[in-house]
Image (cartoon, rainbow, N blue to C red):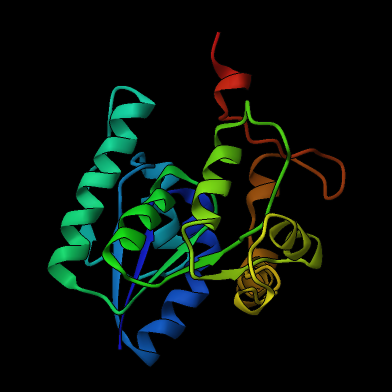
Length: 209
C-alpha cells in the first residue's frame, strides 16, 4: 500500500516525527513537505534534531498572501497526488497544508485526519475554519480526546469513522526524554529549573502591528 503524508509546519513535523518512521516500515510511504513553514528555525531544525528523514517532495508553496498560499497548496498538492497516486493520504492538524484533504477527497483518495475534532468556536481564528473543512473532507477521523470525538458526532460525522488515538506528542516526548534531560540549554541561558516561562509568539494577532 502506498501512503502519502503531507505536512508543512513545525507542529506537524514534531507530532508526526515518530509516526513517519513507523509508516516507513509498514508501507510505501511518500512524505511531502509543502514548505508552508520555510524558515530553518521552523522547519529544517526539527527534521535535524528529531532525526526525521527528508521529504520525498518539497512543494515550495510560499505566497505573498494567505489566499495565494492556499491556492499554491491546492494546486501543488493536486500535482503530487496525480503523479504519486497514493492509496491513502495522512494529514495532521488544522494548517493550510492540511487543506490538501480537499483535493484528495475530490480525487477519491481516502483521507485520514489526525487531531480531528478540535474546536474553539471562534470563526475569527483561521484554523477554526480549516478544522471544519478538513474534518468534513476526511474519511477516517482520529481525534485526541473524547471531547473532540463528541464535537464530530454533533456535526453529523458517523461514529464508525472516528477513532480516538490520544496525542502523538506523548511518544515524541518519551522517545526524546534522554536528550531533553541531557540538554544544557538552561545553563547556557542562565535559567533555573521551574523558575522561568517559555513563550512562543507567532500568530498575526499577537505580533503584527
